[in-house]
Amino acid sequence: MNQQRGYFVTLDGPGGVGKSTTLTALAEDLRERGHRIHTTTEPSTSPLGQFTRTQADHIHGHALACLVAADRYHHIRTEIQPHLDAGDTVLCDRYLGSTLVVQRLDGVPEPFLLALNADIVLPDLAVLLTTDPATIARRLAARGAHHRFEHDPDAPGREVKLYARAEQILTSLGVRVLTVDTSNTTPSKVASRIATALSTHPGSVTSRTRPDGHEAAP
Image (cartoon, rainbow, N blue to C red; front, side, top):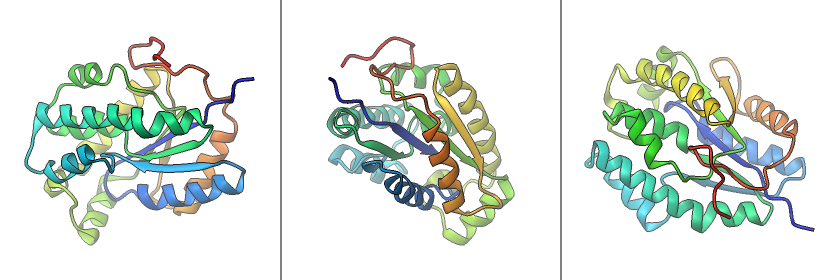
């Protein structure tokens, strides 16, 4: 009997919505429910991912989008897919949802981004965390900007709209999407909601699909 592949869960959303704290709480919640958890992030911790992260304020547009995609493919091959094949539940802080927003903010057209990511592994559950732009701006001011996009005072409003568009795109690709407003709740409550949604999933797919709708190579 073939071992069932693990679940792949991604968390995306504007800066300041609590992705990292929610991911930590979600990992703890799922472990208590019997999942074997592997947490990761994008850009990845590989040399390519570290280069992408450190140079994101200096490399722009299509070039940065290509770097992000290259790191993603390497990340899938060397870390994400092996853990899924081993039956682990993989939780990833930022994935395709962020690409469809951050790279759009950087002037890269949507069709180009979808073409770049045509062969990636799609998540079993894509979680999009959101809140109102004023709350995002307030949290960023208190936390401080982490990258050049967060210095733009208009970015929070644009991000919220682009994440709504990203939800439509992900759904059209056959990805199950859960959007959660974090305005008046805690990371632990958000995590519990995500874990409950994952527990109702009919089962992890045996062959992953690509953004173009074709089956990915094993």
